[in-house]
Length: 245
Ligand SMILES: C[S@@+](CC[C@H](N)C(=O)[O-])C[C@H]1O[C@@H](n2cnc3c(N)ncnc32)[C@H](O)[C@@H]1O
Image (cartoon, rainbow, N blue to C red; front, top):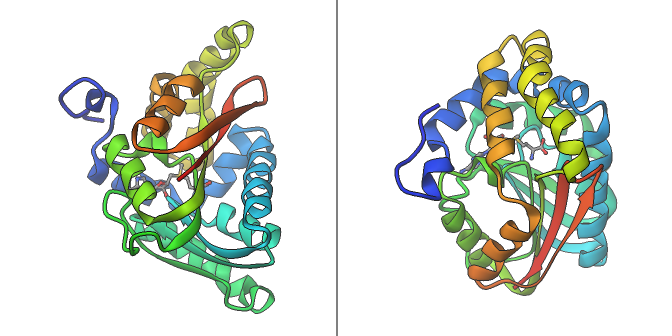
């Protein structure tokens, strides 16, 4: 996958390539997630949803960005029973999976969840129009992270919060095992699950290149967020970040 020129941007992917890559794996994405994380992804998602649901007091409007197949959006609807959940993604095949899952659940959700096209570089949302934003494993794929974080800041109301679930740099003792898994095992497991090894070669590289939790907290502060914190989960494989506008 080509990288953009410059320093920080040189580590960021092209949006069109990301979009095409997720388009190719959309139908097997959920299965691959469960397999590659040993099921931990479901626990991480629930943690994110419960934390955002508690912040919302169960109600309000939440935008789930880079929503993919909608896992976080559905978990949010359960964790915040009176909230409206709007999922956005720029990859139509991923949105198709989310919408077909929604069709099976919609009567139970009472129309509180919806999915729409939305590029995180230019969100189709008014300024200060949402109470909370969630992003799971999306920020790492943004072609311009500073721009994406600034968009999140723009759409949040003052006092609103963003919750970012993202891979991070694990604890030092665990790092060699983890790097071996990412470089040597994950791409082959992914090929079995999705038929697409390239996408997961990219995934491994993007995880290893993503900033540590402290450095990402600093990026959140630099676009204007305060009360920034991060909880490391599962030996620091992922971090759950929270920041307030
Ligand atoms: C790893 S998946 C995460 C999906 C979901 N949040 C989850 O928890 O499973 C990353 C998603 O980010 C989306 N994405 C990446 N960059 C985006 C952008 N600039 N705007 C909208 N969606 C984006 C991709 O299309 C893909 O569906």
